[in-house]
Length: 469
Image (tube, rainbow, N blue to C red; front, side):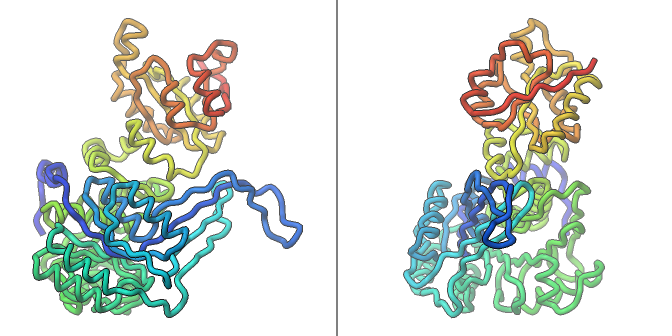
């Protein structure tokens, strides 16, 4: 497979305009209840979760739609929900994101898929699933009419198959034939424990290691077995490409026996693998819809997967996020704009801890102060004044510029995110981010804090930490 220069890789993403991508798949609602367990129920030996907040997010194919929309694609949704509360919520969430829902049908006999997770601190106590009854039939006539009208005018079609009854053989054959006739890339994230020949004539399928092993009937233990599996899948299903996600071993892009590429995974700490597979297929679709090659698409998909597993929970990335990571590397993934951080925090389960300062002339005293943040067991955001705001306040430029200060702070283990701000104080950030605790140095205990009103508005607690040096 072809190797590309850094400038060619950068251009393959930055030059994409606004591709139209049709996503066909199983829509689900992910519901989360967060709280604390402080007692055991008197009715049975089970914990009682005191719920502090609830959150509802797009799951299944909806998460892929969200990923593509955030990257900048024009997304058209095709799927089915029930005529129930969860279905209404899914439609609302899709429409809030600007996703076209004209291909989503609400069907009376269908039950919307709902996954309700109950979480105490870092512990998942329970997941309750609501699925369509066994034997439920999805009416497909209207959906297939929509596909026939829509596929000829889009730039790519992505199938997100969770085996919930939508994507039967007839619909898959219709999609594959329409895409082939109109020369439109068709990508599929397949379900487990089925014969992948049902995805015949698709451009690409992207199974993970377990799905591949289930499909081919032997374990993937080395490069030879992985290549043998990819070859078997490609020719049995008459595919153009096979992309296999291999978790810590990276990814295989396979065109044919003498034309393939193993992409290595970055060596990094893994926080959460949930959503990484959706991220890979989303980025592949976005790049191929934008005219990139499979090699370029694979590069960006692997980079995005590496970013995804460093976040707790499911998160979407903008094109700017990917380019930023490409330019500055792994550590800079901690450095975010206010927009990026605001978009990320709803997916973060830990309590938000906030501190701010110049952090100019960083010393061991600063590092000792920051190290204490770990004792609060939260998600620690450090906000630093920009060069401009320091110059306006002090009259002199800082010894270290804002980029250098941000990069140094992002290398500190106890710091989860760094943000640069222009204002004289951090009141606007506090009002926007709504931390649970705001940390200041001990010397500020008896001083009037410029952020005091903002802290009171959001109900945050103020913690005063000892200072050193």
